[in-house]
Image 1: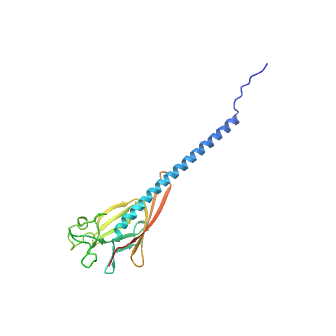
Image 2: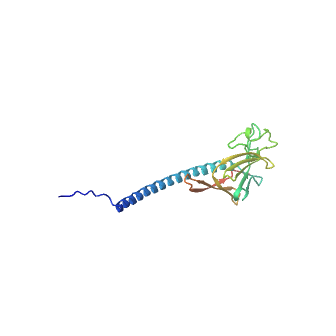
Image 3: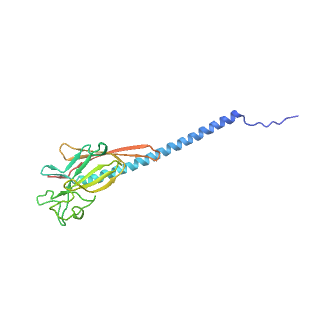
Length: 216
């Protein structure tokens, strides 16, 4: 008489299968985590690159209009004068302080040095408070970093008192400024730092040489 035995899995076989399955799940999770980490890091780097580019472009657009008059440089760099050892950049540029005026005088030099109240201003409506060139009300533009890693654009009057302050950029952790020996070029060195969604810290730095246009 032939007996029919039903054979099941042994405990050892079950443990082996479970171990293999666990390793497969672990490998899949590791691959997904690595992929997500790479994607979030790339996304963060892209955001930082855009932030650095825009920040450098906007600061340099104003700074390049500065220069000197009668040998007096209109740019001042306060080395280490900002938060956490960062630099402070202060400068003046040609302004139109009365309706119908020109930025240049009859001899081709800058008629009046000052600062637009708002970035991108190009006429007297935001370059002087009382439309009177006898007193240029906005004298300096100042860029610096605060404790929140924000770049501030500050407008000061003739006595360096604050008139207006705007947050100009975020995630900027370092701001260093140097002036060439001939005082023709200002180099901006900016570092941006941000944590990704997976708490990975990403840091990027960029530099830009800005040539001062108005030299007399």
